[in-house]
Every structure is written in C-alpha cells, then in structure tokens.
Length: 87
Image 1 (cartoon, rainbow, N blue to C red):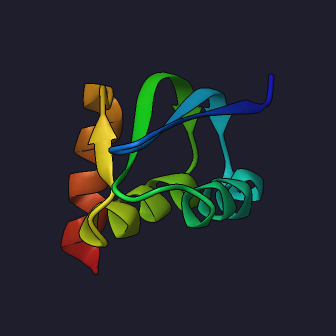
Image 2: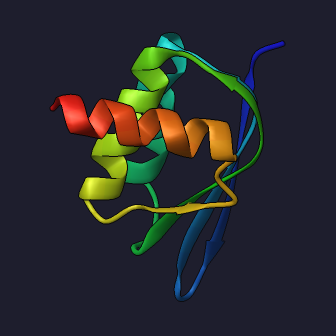
C-alpha cells in the first residue's frame, strides 16, 4: 500500500488527510501539497498505518514550522518525541 493524499481546502485553511503508509519517498509530495495549500495547514494522520524514520523526522519539522498534526497515533507521537530530542 502506498500513501494517498487528500486535501480539503477551505476559506480558513487546509486539512491534508494522509492515508496509508508514509515513507521517505512521500515526503516531497506532502511538502508540495502543504506549499500549495491555504494557510493554516493541518495534517490529518488518523489513517496513517505506518511511517518510516524520514517521515517521522518530516513530521517533527512540519510541526515546528506551525503545521498542526491532527489525530496522530501514539506510536508516531512517541517516535516524534524521541527524534525531536536527538535534534
């Protein structure tokens, strides 16, 4: 399974829903979607079933830049905390 990206643009911002497995090869696609979105942008991670280290590092950086992470699974949040401590 790959990652599906679904953007919901609204007057007050954009929610980008990620569905499936997020890996390094998807980071640039997600970043491009954020760049094309109306601010503020949020990533809805409710349907992310797996992530690799590059995806987790991207999520850490995105959150630091003000991107809201919605419905982040506890295992991803915990991994993000460990990666954030390393940087």
